[in-house]
Every structure is written in C-alpha cells, then in structure tokens.
Length: 146
Image 1 (cartoon, rainbow, N blue to C red):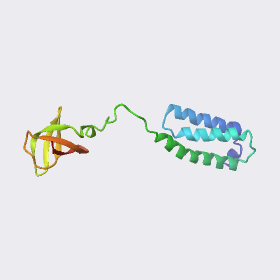
Image 2: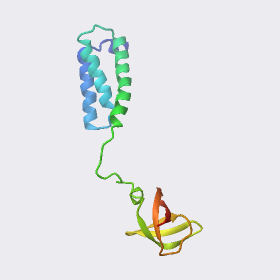
Image 3: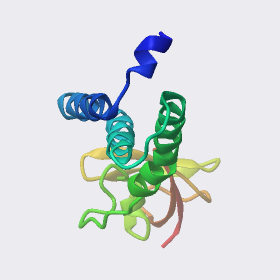
Image 4: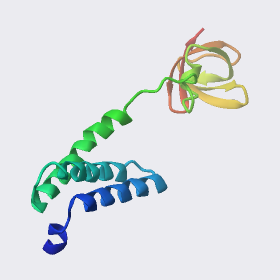
C-alpha cells in the first residue's frame, strides 16, 4: 500500500481528479466533484512543489475538507422564484377570507377551499360565517372571524 501511495505523482493525481469529476457527471450528487477538484488541485500544485506522498495525501485531505464549507455556502444560495408558495399551499391561504362549511365547535371546524376541505381551528362560529385565515400549521388552518 505504501508503494502505491508513494508512486502517486502529478499525473496520477490529475487522472484521479478527472475520474472523480467524471463520476460526478455520470451520477450527480456534488460529493465526488469536491474530491475530484481536491485531487486536481494537488496534481496542479505538484508541478510546482516537490512534496512527499504523505504531504500530498495531507493536502488532498485538507482540500477535500475545505470544500465542505464552500459547498454548504454555495448550496445555501437563495434562488428567487415567481412561485414562493409552491409546495406550501396552506401558507398561500393566509390572509384570505372563506365561508365556514361546518361550524367551529370546541375550536374545530371545516372550510371548503376550491375542491379541498380544510380543518380550521378558532373561536366557535356557526356554519356560513366568514372567517379569515391567520396562520397555517401543516394541514390545519387557524382562523378568526372576518
């Protein structure tokens, strides 16, 4: 094993880096990309620095670990969308007024919105009264009299 590691040279690091980047292209997951870039960086630096295989492995490890915070920063980039409530349908209902289909009794009632029946929570109110949605908690809506 030590012989294999000691034989790692500049071109081997570049080849390993390209193979890892190629694997990332075939099966994207943003994991092999960083390892591949770390290997490519070690290979490129090996042209200018005459370092031992131990230092090369340490540099590869350091570059791969340093890539994690970079990846997290890039992954956290907020993308503006024209559909902010996509997959959060209940949040899109906050502020709207609807008619109770079933009365709110003991804090629980039902309102029909389009083709869906939603469970609502709020002060007791008779069926047919107008309620305003003030909050959404999963599939349950909190309402106040409108």
